[in-house]
Amino acid sequence: MWYSEFRMANAGSETIAGPDRMPGGSSSGYDLTIEQLAAEVRMSVRNIRNHHTRGLLPPPQVRARVGYYNSDHVARLRLILDLQADGFNLAAIERLLNGSDGLAERLLGLRNAVTAPFEPESPELITSEELANKFGEIDAKDIARVRKMKLLVPLGEGRFEVPSPALLRAAEQVTDLGISLHAALALVERVSRNCESISRAFTRLYLKELWEPFERAGQPDDRWDEVIDAVNSLRPLASEALLALFKQRMTTQLEDTFGKMIEHQAKRR
Image 1 (cartoon, helix red, strand yellow):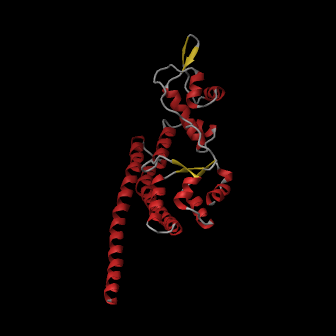
Image 2 (image 1 turned 180 degrees about the vertical axis):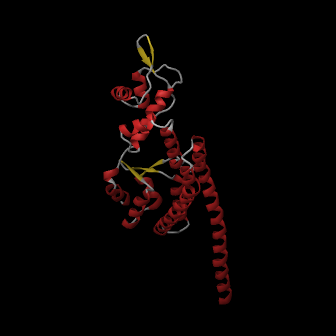
Image 3 (image 1 turned 90 degrees about the vertical axis):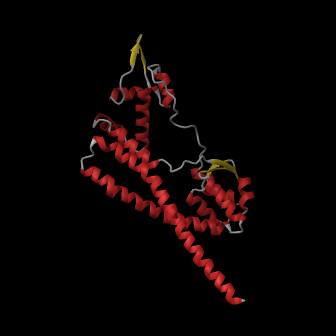
């Protein structure tokens, strides 16, 4: 079956999603021992002590010779984990945390704004049998398209994660209309390339009109929230503008095309 070929082609990257690396819900008071803190952020006690030694973590509140930590310590350790995940080594993190006041948190806030999904979808799981029932056999070229566009993520044991259930449902509805999945995937691939170009244009607009003037001004402290909020505002604005333009263009295309079809049919009678 086609899904077996897809699984084999992705065998090197098959992973089963584990629990979230950074659970929330820590208490705001100083009531976490170092062992509880380690469990909260999923970091070893040894690493936490090392961060203390490097000056990356503020000291705990000591009561009866026992150190207790609060939500600020949890947030700081999560920030360190996020920076490490972004490729920063401990020396660079130390410079960020001990340098300009709050710079690391601001950079992380900017990164979170940039990487946050537009409208988060909850991924769904689907089995190979369900895929076969929905779409039947798929040729090798279309399997490559599915893999390249990451429409399905192999999890092993005949299961797949669907990052965008809405896109999968659209594909199913298209095939129900009688349009081949091959043609639909080819169109999605083309649209994806066009969307990449449009996204690049909006990103350049942000950089040229907002970020570069902010940098030239010396990154003033009182404007960090402004440049971060601008990212969050630009996302829905770009989406609304794109959708509005698409509706106009789609209507024009349909009117022109079907107008010519009707004229052609009238001439045949």
